[in-house]
Image (cartoon, rainbow, N blue to C red; front, side, top):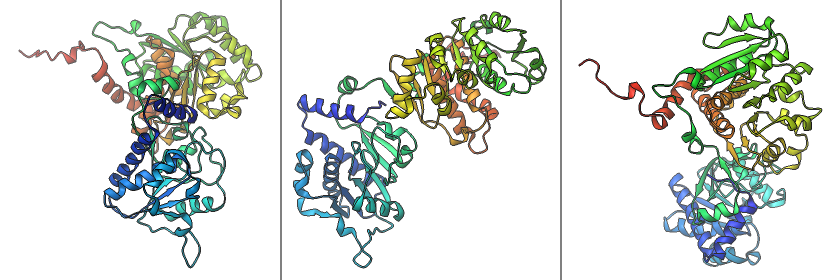
Length: 510
């Protein structure tokens, strides 16, 4: 499931035309897909198609023809003038010219307001992904009327009023139930808050080849298990704990060790063989009293911490560590080990005044896991100057030289070489204390077992979201641990080794 910018999608269309596929045939496929989706989703009801002057409107003209073939009660309106239509949209309009009416005819004769019936289905084909300005005038009034009428809405490509590359909602925009887009997702379909206006997203194949999509696009994809599940490490019958990796979690001071304990448990749940929390002597009693399978070890100074840390397969540094010079010194020292490392929370904030120095210490096996606030502290210029979080995270990964996990409802996982995955798989109930600490431990757990930083981060973000969906309302961060075994077992049964004892089905009773 590729993610393309508006410009890249335009290039794909043009490339297909250069290869001999007519723009009219692409428009016909798009319009037919929209008609099919309307008829399948809402088999009854009056259909009102609202078209604009561009190719988005052309898709609407085509959809009208196919809905007529389904014997639907369908009505066609144009936001603009027929003589302003050009290109393929003009050609599509010529086939239904006698049926096109101005949107002013949707106004109530008595009140002068745009009026819809509750059972109407509106097909929004007014303005597509290339819109770069706010709506105004009659179109803005029409959009507000649609949103307050509670009619069902299908948008073609994106809801009118949004921009394909942006997450922002600037002024009025249609709130859709279903959005039909073509060949690839666009940032607006994934990035909040605009994505919430898109409703259910349907990506339809209209005949653009995979080769063309690869040619025009970068390696930006929706984060799904097919992207990383084959890389998940699993134990076999001869495995033992020391072969499955050792995770070290650096704890905060006494009274602030809960974050480290959450990260440690999560690393253990992901399959790491041994997990150890490294803490100051005063913090050990409260951690040891709460941990069973997780070990604890104390250190008296940062040099001793380094000696303990270098014996690990991966490290987690930052959760509730404290925003102070000592935390900064720990991060600087532990980075010298060259180990795979997850840096979260306070481990990022302590470098807010000197991010360039921080970046000079990082390496490709580091993963930074900031939320937006932490991201802006160490990359203060990127979100403001980027089209969206995808662009900002990719730029940050290149600058830092490591994997970035820019967290949120639309988490972006990005690499220094420009690859990115966008994760929208998760629940709003993840917005609770400690859930980020769990994620940090998960990533370290996979890296300790030899999974790449990019795949470890991608898998962890998705599994984190899957656990939150399993938990539902009332979820707290500790609950996530409960759901991991069942979720991981599904992957193991499909992808794991086939020589586990319980899979051999030996009848020991005979």
